[in-house]
Image 1 (cartoon, helix red, strand yellow):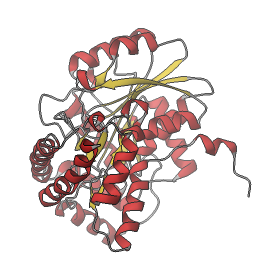
Image 2 (tube, helix red, strand yellow):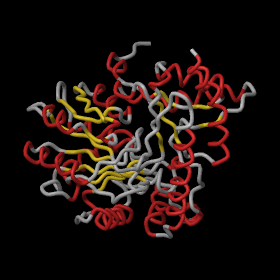
Image 3 (spheres, one colour):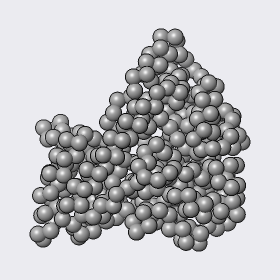
Length: 390
């Protein structure tokens, strides 16, 4: 069977590969502590599940508009206006099955052969994967530990060219937990406005901010018509399996993204969208409770990692990942992650899976119980001690 050559340009998300290997080890009888997958271990709040059940009973099991149900688009527009401080109309909203299609469809709609896209590195691997897939040129901007994993702004400014057609930012960030503060965003916005370059801002971890105040580039001077906002329900409402996300963008681009929905998914499941309305408009206490618990887990894991030989872990300000520096082990990140899985039964990700500038780091998700985080730290100690002896 012939496979198109462009498929060789499409990457993957290593978290799912490591998860599959960990599950295989579990089937053989091993007990694995899962710190590889970015999925809240909390259950979806009851009122959201109840809304889905009621929608199913009411017959919300048929096709809906490709851009999303009008009532959800309206609820999202209101929510974004309130949380980002800018007016938003439902015509600017496109609902998708998960938030990933927004990055995929945006890049597909905007980037042609040879067009350059600036993106964070280390960063969510799907950015670079899709840029390559459509024939664009990825332009990675290093996120450096010494600057809190913020953009290297001087390099960013030098990297902008006449070929730059899109800038991708993510804050709070996966995998580092870094946060772009207002001053950094203002410098990015100034360059974007000066060159009229759209910005795809991935704000899926907006609610997982432990210190400081969240800032969105969307409400900065000149950015209203240059911003494509990506957000969704998977993280904040523990709805990863529901597959519900959205983008907010200029209406002309929204038309193209909706057309890509027609050609791929047709529409997002109607009963899931109605549950999304309940998520946005219902009790937000479960979200606050989950975020508070994640902050406690973050501190536990950071403190524990910093007691392991060869490990130095900064305290991230957002998301639910830690990104410890393991250069003290004098081992490649992939080798360390492999030994942790096979010898300690702890599933983690190599920092290099998020780009070349992630080498020398690991990513751990602390979306797991306190007991399992303590167990992981105990199991990892002998592995790191063995590196120190050699």
